[in-house]
Amino acid sequence: MHSSVSNIFLAIELRRWTAWPTPNYVNPAERGMGVLVVCSLMTAIATVVISLRLYAKLFHVYSPRSDDYCMVLVYFLLLGHGVFTTICVYVYSGRVHVWDIPPEHALKNGITGWIAELLYFCGSTAVRSSILLFYRRIYNNLRFKYFVDALQILNAMYLIGIVTILFLQCK
Image: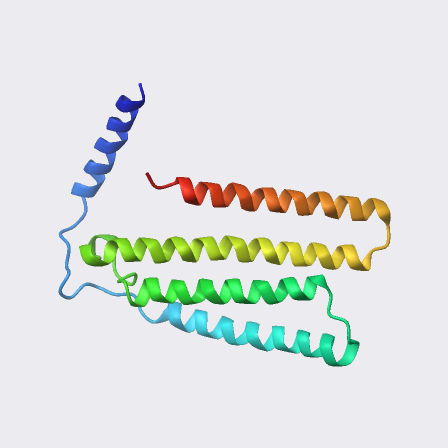
């Protein structure tokens, strides 16, 4: 049963692959510099915001908390995401159509894209965790704290599920 289903999916993929246009490895149509511009701009904005937040917490309030440390973790995770996305797009031919990616770049493109996805999901989970830690700190209701703790557990379960899917999606 399993092999017949696999053969059906393989036949569908082969049919799709043969329907692609002829690859153009010499001079393919490329997308512009949008990814680099957006990654650079968002990194600059995030750097300023995180720096101001830490400056205020360290030198004015004198008490950084767990949500602040979590945001620093978020910054580095999403910085890594931006770096790997840029490498995927500009070094390993991510600016061209899939059928125009040279075979020697295909594996490296896939791996850097996969790492970028992993960093993105870890970073977005850490953002939610930081927000929940902030809510837990500012509200003094015990029932609300239990609710936030339950949401933290759901957030962690979401990350475990996504990471499991990322590791199991390739054969």
